[in-house]
Image (cartoon, rainbow, N blue to C red; front, side, top):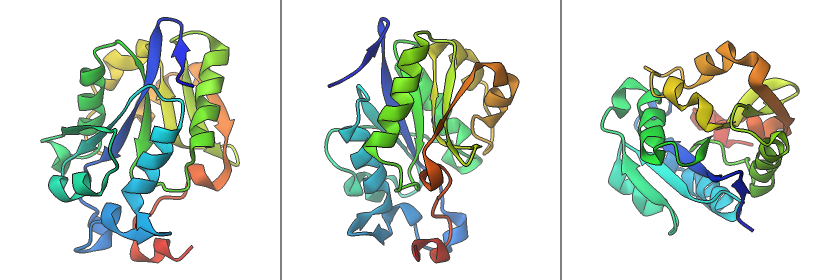
Length: 197
């Protein structure tokens, strides 16, 4: 069942535009892990969750990454992908036009499941407002995904570089709700060695 919180739904944006610089010449999102590409794991989990709609922000090798994604995703290209993930977040926020809350997911975190995503959605629903940030944690440490209410969109549109949205979260620590999901919140696949799990 899809979710509606107040008037506005919750949509997902998968960040899949990066250059995988620590993987050498390989695009980590296209690497196979447990039978399918890394980015496909994340997309499948998002599509199986209670998110209303899911889009993927593409950039580096956009055609190849799009070909690896399942049907049912919205696709947009971040032309500023070389300057870091902030451009993808900004583009995703602008696409939503304040009509939906947003969950930011990373394309290289395949341990995140639909159940994890739904747990963040449930925490957001329990708050019953648009002025909170729900973050997945691993042993109490912030990780990903992160769900932002529309109240934070103006600040997310000001992000720059490759720092992601952590700066917004640091400013609004009193608005943060933590949801423990374990190692899935922390395990990304940035190097060839990371695939040996």
